[in-house]
Length: 59
Length: 248
Image 1: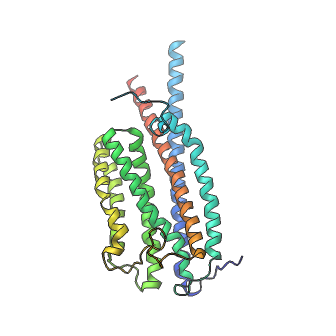
Image 2: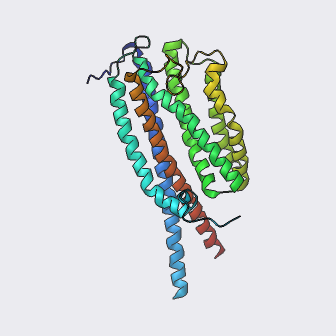
Image 3: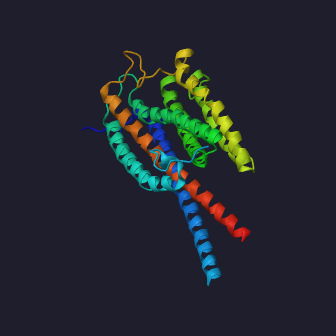
């Protein structure tokens, strides 16, 4: 299989298009994972806080 | 309204707990499939021969067309989720709508940017106010309007209702984008993939990378959509817990 990475006179258009695509995917992945992690941790923290206060009331 | 059947085959899409159990394995699975397909798609992209007319710019087709297709598909998902949220007031449907809007906006912006980079060497211009390009720009404005409306109103229920109505109005634009190249004279070429006219279809050497890259984009969207809906379910849970804590 032969790979052609030499875009010649069109390199100035081809590579920025691929770079933009890579950048957009990096943003979408990073933003989605960061948001999920942030809210999962917040929910777990509040749940632990609630469980602890319930435990303290019962004892 | 009748009681929900917990054994319904689509229950995992309507019950938040079942959705979280389903998406816990489905999101990484879609992500892994997307990564493998993207790797294979990139190999095929750079192994494909230069086009006799377009030269090396033909490789931009394999990243531009899937982004453009996803921009329409994601908006259709946004419209369906908004309809379900508006009519049935379903919390997961509303989360699905909010979760897909930024992804759809990103795919639309990507389609416009890569299209512009492809247009300059092929058409001699970065931008032209023709029907296809303008209707895709309008699509981006609908996405941005939806996101702006969601964050502009303090009352989340009012914001959700207003944004859902805007999303439904925006559905009118989808057939305009799709058929713009047939209804009006356009610099943009007609379809060469699905619904291509006889003789306009891609040869296999270009059709394969296009198919694989399109499936990679679709799988990536599936994975990211699920992750974002999971984030919103946790956010809702965190807010409910914070409210309970404040009430003592």
